[in-house]
Length: 69
Ligand SMILES: [Zn+2]
Image (cartoon, rainbow, N blue to C red; front, side, top):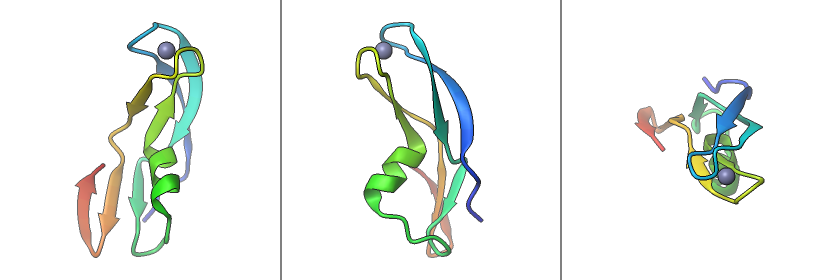
């Protein structure tokens, strides 16, 4: 199954600002045909202050195989 988006507060490791973003804890590509750009949005956040990008450990399932992005 694909998790609903969860709001999270991210503390930027680069500039120490905090900001709000969202991610999906897991994505099942067998059920949801997301493109790569959306998948990237599901699993990452970009700091609005300095542009530093962080990745969450989103679990992605494709063809029954789970892997971390
Ligand atoms: Zn930052």
